[in-house]
Structures are given as structure tokens and as C-alpha cells.
Length: 375
Image (cartoon, rainbow, N blue to C red; front, side):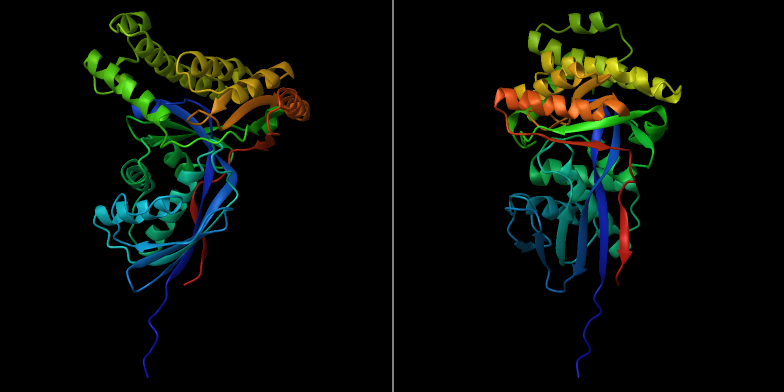
């Protein structure tokens, strides 16, 4: 009688993230300050011996997908491309991962600027890494997930979201240095300071594969070439006016100004947090939003409305979080004011005829990991 082959199974998960400050800096070699959030994506992976991957998700509107474990970019589209891309990136790096049944469940809102796609990819990556004993460290996994995102899915993102999802820690934000590819935890006990982070999902969904994100990245890369450097990070310490004077295109000037001033705001925020002065970071968050609105031009009316309403209701600072063109806003508020801030945003949306936003609070949470051992 044939003996059934051993079946290996693992369940892993990875969180979404809120970027406290530092937007569109990662692909420019700069700094960002994200935090992992309690909302997570879970991936249950069970190996198959036929070289096929069957991916299913509990998310509304998703259909199960079947594809080869050795698929190539372009073979799989839609939500399952994020799963296929992780298999492709691992195999392309020399890790002969077999087929699998992949079942996905998530509490990270899709398209809300909270990095739902990277939570999915990181959940699959950490699970496959553990299931097959690949021994890859988290930075390597982040780079592989970025490769999947860039070359399989076709979204020109940096590595900040992946590093936040993989390196998140309870009670800490993560100082991500994109040039050094390091993730340094920075204590951020907002509750002890009587503060809350209020997130507003505007329900204006965005996709990184759309052209706006790529156009911003291309503009920055063109500017770096004109400046004779590999990334804009290399001119971070030069006088800003001197750098901008070398550029003769107004759009490029504004894009570069955002990146360089945003890096400075990240470092100023870190210094305040380390000094126990979290309540003072509010103006930096708001300045970041103004820069994204006016210089990087990645906000939309719903996002701007949410920021204005939050500030009008007493928030200490507020900004769009995520890649832009929709998504979410994060506001820093006294815990006693968080309900008033949320109510003010809802009222402003109602007044303008926008769909009702989703408003909730977040705290810095743990990063990706294995949920259980089911082998």
C-alpha cells in the first residue's frame, strides 16, 4: 500500500503599516518612520507536489487563482500576482520552493494606503521561509518582496513598507534608512503621553501600478542624474537652495524639495520622540502634508479635507500616509480629543457629499512572524 507523502503546512502573518512621516523618500535613499499596526494579513501555506500554486483569499471580490510555482512576470494578474511574485522572487534567487495551497485572510483595508499588498507579500514570504527552512533574514526577505513588487506586479515601490512590516515592534516606530537598508526601533509610547494616532481611511482607493507613483519616482531619478549623484540622499547635507538652483525644471524642483525637506522632518521627528517630546511632532506631520500636497502633488480632495477637519477639531498634526492619490490620513491627537477629531472628519465628508470614511486608532505593533506550527 502506498504511504501518503508527508504534508508540510505553516501559517504566518504580517502587519499593515502606517507611515508616521517620510513619504516617497525610500526610493531616493532617504529616511522614513513607519510603524506596524495591529491589522494583519495571514497566509496559511500547505505544500503541493504537482508544481502548482492554488491561491485563495477571503477578501470580497477575489477569485481563487491557479498558476505554476515557476511562473514568470506577466503570467499572473490581479490580486494573485502578489502571491505569485513572492514565489517567483524566491525561485529567481535560487530557492526552489515547490507548489502550495495558499489561503489568505486579512484585516488590513485594501487600497487604503496602509500597505495591504506588502502585508500579503510579507506574510507569504515569512511563511515560505520558515516552511522550507530557507534561513533568510528579514532584510533579505524585504528586498525579495520589493523585487516581486517591482518586477512581477509592476509597481515601482521602495523597500520601506516591507521593512516596516517585517521589523515592526510593539511600542516602537521604525527608523528606516533606505541607503543603509537598516531598521532601527525608536520608542514611541504615545499612550503614556496621553496621545493617540487616529487613522482616517478616506475610501479613495489607489494602486501603485498606476502612473502617478512611477512618474514621481522617474522625476526624482532624472534629477539625481542631473545632479551627478545616484540618489537624492547624496545631496541631503548640501544647502537646499544650492541644490535646487542646479535644476531648471519647476516640477523637478518641487519634487526634489519635497524629498529633501521630508528627510529632514523625519530626523527631527526622531529626535523629538527620543527626547520624550512626542506632543511636539504635530507641526512636522502637518508640514509633511503641505509638502505632499503642494510640491509632490499626490493628495486628493478627500485626503485634504480629512487633514483640514482633523486640525480644525484640535489634532496636533495630520498628514496623508502612504503613496498618495487616495488612501488614508494619520492625525496625532490628545487621547481626550480622538472622538472629536473623528466626528469632525465624518461631518466634513458628509457636508461635501463624500462617502463616509472609516476612522480608527492604531498603535505600534509587532512585525511579521509565524502564527503556529501545524506540520
